[in-house]
Image 1 (spheres, one colour):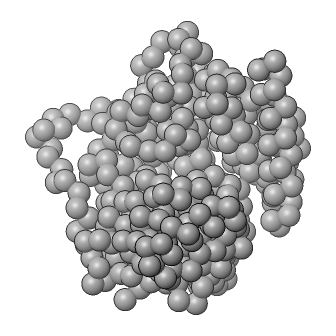
Image 2 (spheres, rainbow, N blue to C red):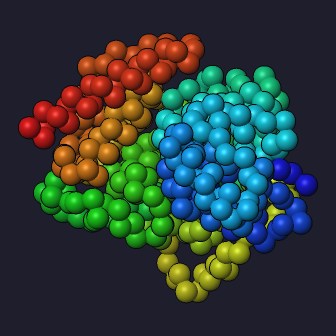
Image 3 (cartoon, rainbow, N blue to C red):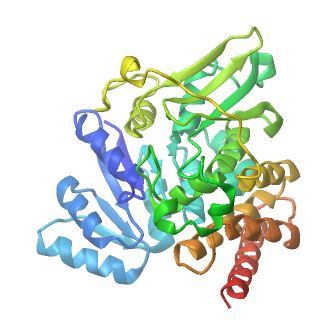
Amino acid sequence: MPNVTILGATGSIGVNTLDVISQHQDRYKVFALTANSNVEVLAKQCIEWNPKYAVMADEASADQLEQRLRAQGVGTEVLAGLAGHEYVARHAETDYVMAAIVGAAGLLPTLAAARAGKRVLLANKEALVMSGRLFMDAIRDHHAELLPIDSEHNAIFQCMPADISKGLEKSGVKRILITASGGPFRTTPLHELSNMNPSQACAHPNWDMGRKISVDSATMMNKGLEIIEACWLFNTTPENIQVVLHPQSIIHSMVEYADGSVLAQLSNPDMRTPIAYALAWPERIEAGVEQLDLFEIARLDFERPDYQRFPCLKLAQEAMQSGGTATAILNAANEIAVQGFLDGHIRFTDIARIVETTLEQVSHHEASNLEIILTDDGAAREFSIHQIRELAA
């Protein structure tokens, strides 16, 4: 029975992972759960699942969690900080690691899991966006398994031939078609975008997600990050990836072949489908997802993305083409800008401007090691914070 460690257990991916496992407790055992600062939810999860380890991001939160668990008679060992996250990710008893920590904070624990040869269920985009070559080398060199959790990449994986290591062209693949809902502002008049507030940006029409990724969906930076991720996962370039707006979010992505065939993966917009697929691969198991009713859906619409409406999409494509640490700089600037917007310091349309200016002003380098990547990441964050202060003044 595989032991599962969930990095980011209190977020939507973590909660859905536990839901899938709850339906298959004869197949999987929860070994470790981690969270940032949500002591209340992680305590409830530990009481229910009794993992061997629980990890909080800082000592104060870890102390609070330990007090709650001891009061309930739960014997879970509580750890704290990055060291604790890396410890459970690479632990000898961990078999599968759900990498669901949002943002750059998830990079090092996810990399630790790869270097320990685990099955990595990758829901953290930043591991590949920041350090694609290093991460993919770690997967290969340490014989780890990498299974994507993003609904789009999971769909692409399901539609790909069995062995794509020789490259897409030699496998008969012509293009990857990544679908995107277009988020809450797909039809909002352009002149109104600057006045959109965080509540409106987080009101996704199809998916229930955290605030940061919801804003990324509104700007379509999430799709830009997915292009970068897909390039590394499937050994290709942005030129071979087409983004297709599909507001129903029923087709999660497609693969076009040289003979004209296009294979698509369809399901209701429910993250339990890709989670169940990755947990059980190459088998398939029940996920608790409602059956897809094509008669109720009735229609599937497709549109071309508008770069004027979604400039972040273009910025991400350009960063991937630039190579090196440009994608890490893009990601860092976006994280800071999104938080600045959520905190009410900048306008929605300032997010793309801050990312673009940061990419222009912060030098990027060859991403040959983690130190260089993290140094450029830090420089991009400092520069982005400075821009927010100027805009808020």
